[in-house]
Amino acid sequence: MNTERWVRVVAGFFVLLSVVLGAPGSPVFVSEWFLVVTLFVGFNLLQSGFTCFCPLDRILLKFGVPGSGACGR
Image (cartoon, rainbow, N blue to C red; front, top):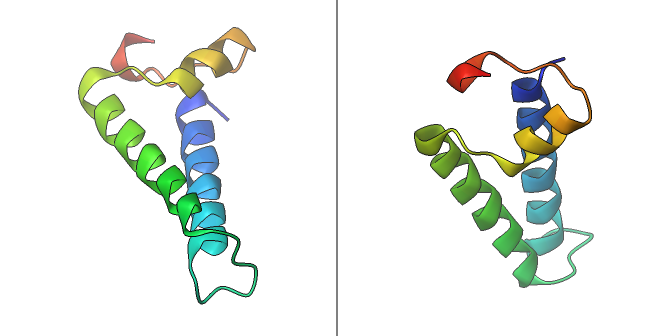
């Protein structure tokens, strides 16, 4: 898997986890503040679409995960 696919997997995991932990109707509800994680992930995905800067992408490249070829990597 390349960095683009890993970013999608990790982002999806964090969105699902934060919604489950932050939704008041969830059986594992902890706090509504977990929904801030969803906001952060969504904002980061949006800005990376325009700027081609994604911190997770950079971290994965340093760990040797092959780049996706997007944005000149």
